[in-house]
Image (cartoon, rainbow, N blue to C red):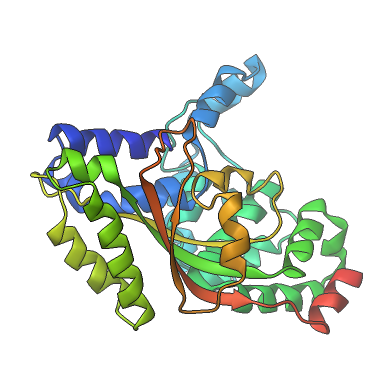
Length: 313
């Protein structure tokens, strides 16, 4: 489990969560898990930085970097892509900064910009991946892959870049867009509820979602029903993800949120389905009482035609 999510949960456990922290719990969980970035891995990477790389990341942040989020928000089709958006920027330590590429991309909501950035041949490959992942969360795989296919047809030279060959390979696989909630029996127990309530809540929510219940409304209802004394909810929002049958170096970190042994079951589901699955014990603070609820928002089925044409160029 990412370190900032662990800290948020420890704050809930000890009753030290402020009102502001409680109100931003969903955002914390969504940011920590939705990006699939393990901050622990970042800490290890920071410890291995070369002197040159350390000197680079310790330099003052350019003023243009602080304007980047605003420029992305106001960007329109036809505008030039900001130079800073093309660069991959990461902080030296384990805690991300607001100017880091991962943080900037995770907060971006301008879908046309993300597609344009992802298909700009000057963009750093890591930034390309981030832009595609963020676009997928905002719009789903059917729309994103259709828009990317059009871009690949109009600019076949993008296929010469490894990152775009990887994206095109993913477009030839079945993808599912899911959103999730997490329930842990020990949290329910420590908050004064019986452990059985975690499983009962998960099954009740799954049943109601299959019947068409609104995700946010039902989440708010169960947050009021099951919570710590300080109001921190026991039902954790995992955000949404688009995942496929392929595992590679880019999405291997998502093992914490969409375990590989859940994939075969998820990939057989249809839009609207909701499933409760058990997480196996791991070294990442998960226990046998950890349950994940997944609801399928959309299923992307690869077709011939444009996808094959884009990949063959």
